[in-house]
Image (cartoon, rainbow, N blue to C red; front, side, top):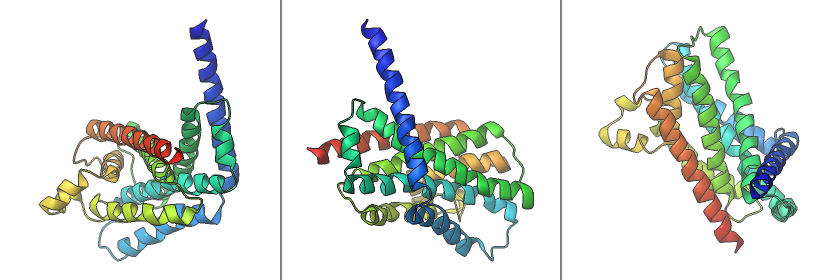
Length: 252
């Protein structure tokens, strides 16, 4: 009987998570803040550093995909949760007969799906206009999926701080996202960084996303696709754990 109840509760939670994700997609995907911080900002920042480089355009595609995934996936949670705190929607979700985990899953799904939709745009541009080749479709799927979900949980972790102003979260989040773009092999390969830079890069999830996408499109890798995938799963679990702990701490 208890097993049947647990399965039923799991189905209820999954349905609730999907409903939350669909609601967030319908309402927040076209918000000016989401489009600015999730799409335009990373695009212009990447172009400002990439334009003028004496390298084939196709070699820049993995970095553009990686930075797009970072900013798009991590922008949804910090936009959605503070706004819902302000209008008391988030509190209503917490009082609903669903688990807290289903709420977090729904919020991360919103960022995950948004990032996948945005991340394939530079991929298609690279394939159609710059002659980018897919060396490993499995590594490409892993890079897009694991990277999108990892950065979605990063956004949820920062959104756990108690504020109803998305700008406050975005300001703090950018203090993390911007340094990550410079130490993760996006503009300068990790192997070309000084020793301290290579050590710092090893603590950045963006490093492993970029390495995985680079392997998928160029066949070049520093850590290997298996190591990249495992580390991204560990980062995702850490961000989820910290986000839940922070939320529980600030809601007391």
